[in-house]
Amino acid sequence: MNKNRYTLKELAASSVYFSIPLYQRLFEWGEEQVIGLLNDLNEHFYKNPHKPYYIGMFTVTKHKNETEKDKYDLVDGQQRFTVIMLMAIAFGWKDLIGEKEFRLSLFARKDDSEYLRHLVEAPDALPSGYVNRKMQDALENIRNYVSEFDKADKNSFIENIKENLTFFLSELPEKYGANDLNKYFETMNSAGKGLENHEILKVKLLKNANADKQSRCVRIWNLVSQMDKSLIDSDKVKSMFSCGIDKVIESFFDKNKPDTRTDKQDSIKSVQISNTRPEHYYAVDEEKSIIPFPEFLLLVLTLYKEQRGLENEGNSEFFRTDKLLERFECLLKSSGDEIHDFYEELITYRILFDCFIIRIQKSETNNSYGMEFKTESDSLEDANIPDRKKLIQYQSMLYVSTSYYLWLKPILKYLKTNWQTVSETDLLTEIKRIDDNIIHPFSLIENEVNTVKDEIRPDNLSYGKVSRYWFWRLDYYLWEKNMDEGRPDSAISSYTFRTNRSIEHLYPREDSKQIKKWNDDSNVLRNSFGNLALISSSFNSTQGNDSVGVKFARISDQINSGNLESIKMYKMFQVAGGNENEWTENLAKEHRKEMIKILDASYKHN
Image (cartoon, rainbow, N blue to C red):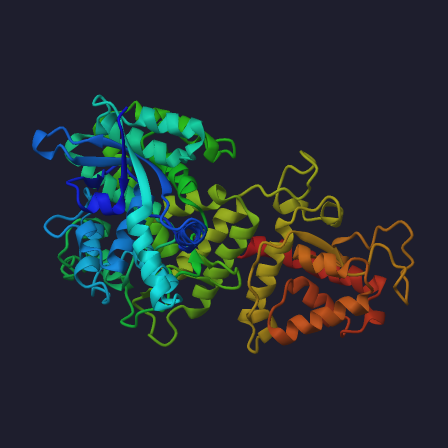
């Protein structure tokens, strides 16, 4: 292999140009990586002014066209080189950017290419259309970093970067064509380069896809893989319901606005879109998807196989992301047309996912719903607001309590067929039906309980045996009951599901701090469902074996701050009137009876 050493100044004076091929992943560096590089540069030049800083090796393949002998595809190094180009934009290095031809081109990524051109030509103004948020943020990180220097230090730092930031080119043999690089990727991964399985899968699928559809497949993959960014905005939602999902999909490949004429509305006129744009059409920086991309891939794969009558598995073993490449072997052996069909299913299910499935805030203090719609009979004033909130809460409950594939797969399957006519009430009913038919274990002891509805018994819900699911389900139905009352309790109304994992005893297991003690030497009652609630691990460690009074004081603080950890615990607080001496054995028994009654009734809602 040839090795060529370049500083940025030398690169600017050369005829070397780079492109990012279609099989490469998108630019992903965040603030931590960008600022980390700048800190390293600053520290290096402070200690070793005017000495090279080696940013590493860029692995490339040379373009075969003889007239493009100095043009290379970046096989490894695109993240680092993209940051270098953003530095060039921030520092005004036109010779490095390329005045007649850009130093960096992005193959088959029209939006990103145009956005990069915009940064060069109008770096201080955001475009009116597409924004590559990662590039924009990285550019701002670079500018903000150097703005803290005084003028002399800033100029010296910038000049040192151009003069001394150094990289090497390592050219792969000519036999490594664009469709044969998966072997190289696998080698890099096994050598510790850290390529993820879905990135290797991308190259393998692309290798087998029809050549005339590769660009479309890459566009679909790049869109769908950004799970934390919603693909759906208000115009696309309206187009989806007026003209169909196909129109929305094509809008991603056509710069022109999708046709939103209503000449096809007769078949779907039971659903209309509110003229008021909801605040949650777009994912924001604080939001994220409830599942990552590899899990979504496996989810769509099972749906794809099921639709085609292929042998399919849907158990937990199938959804192991470390087995992603193995799971896709069946598709990798398929024809190019079948692979293309999978890509079309991938973006179709992603649109349904964005429209109908919740997003969560990274702080996990609130959730948002993908879209807003109403049936024709609803008025704008009361367009299913209660059912919308219930739908958000029920999905939130399932998100924290139940393996994603058990409920998301049947929901997406249902939506694929019914999205045109489904209302929020319909979807809530269906998601409850799906959950009711999931075999949730009552006991953590394997095989002890085999059925669902008929086994809600006190002995199955005691400490050391009870599955956490039943606390979350109970909290949902307590919340729903509160919502349906004429004057709901605001402390319950503001409740948000979190991934709490700790089962807490209200009356402590060790009662040395308890003034009024229970006559419960066998611990049967204190370990019963009537004395238990699900809270966060941090709250549990704070409480330990504190008395009921201390725990009630903390619950009172949660009430005042609108930040309940458990509605069930709040109910225990209420029935005791907030008085630790009133939390008696009889009250715990009554509470257990009432809560089990609510759980039992929750299976009779249809």
